Image 1 (cartoon, helix red, strand yellow):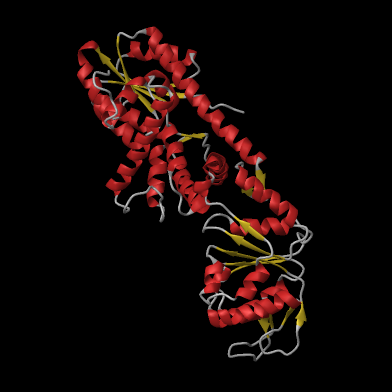
Image 2 (tube, rainbow, N blue to C red):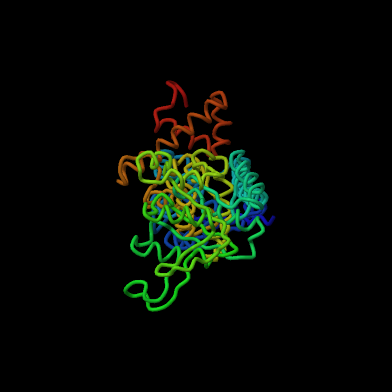
Length: 461
């Protein structure tokens, strides 16, 4: 696994300071870029996306606080450290409020400077290793285009392997976006029909008056506009698999005809008296309760019994959250290659948001969110900013907010962060240093968040 060299951007108008930091930074494995001009530095930051930025408070053209503010608007993943003299501590605190991670006083404590470089370097490498490991695991637990390390998904995979060689009809249950068509394709590709055609149709997308013709075909002159003979989907899929998605939307009048085809294997084109023999595996999928629909008279119970010989139930993504890191790693790899970007990891808050979101749109929504985030990404790390924007733009964003209003979404994200910090602090027994390391924050950053969320104990630093 190749670890990308971490990048350091230093902004200071003193050549001696730049020379010192360059020497120490390069000795710790950083690619160092120095700037004496604030505006030039902002352009460099946008183009190179550094992992660490060190900013002098007093710059001749642009105030250091303005640089911190501008950097944090454009890059929420970079670690920003303010450099200041002993007499500017108040300004350093203000910089921390604006988004700086830490501050260093001049003249530098060389031990602390070196330790900071080591911490950033190790954290950058750790994020890259975690993403690489997740990708490797995703490849190992991939089955027929599906990824799942969780016990519930491993059971689904095992059931598909056992059913694929024998099953003639199957019914797949699952919420929208859980991957029902992937299950149908897995049954097809893992069985003896894999060399034949796989034909998919969404029953909710076909005009009701044309449904019979689509499924069973028609002869010329059977109705207005039937200018030629046409084979239906059953004939097209002969020898292979026909996937009927949203089977609960099939018109009641056609349900009896579908049942007859399943029982006899014969289809009859609209306008023809001559039946055609077919050999088709039929896999149906639904996100509805067909038993309830049958009781209400909206779905034939005899067709339900015929379809329900074999049933596969797919879990919602919120019920298999342990798979989210591996799904995310696979999607990020796919979109990085598609868009020509090298994306090596997720910022810790971004990973937490993915893990904590409710995902009403399931895997489809996760995939769409990550695709948008990869389009927005300007550097090797997917930031919480890119993930947050992408989540809020998702039609069913799953952030547990009442509306799509930006303020409410921001409050929901803050609530998730507060809950996670509470959990980590409790797990570490109140040890702030350990909690900060586990959260990927400096101790000062952790204290600021504790105060912001009302979690700081009276008298605590």
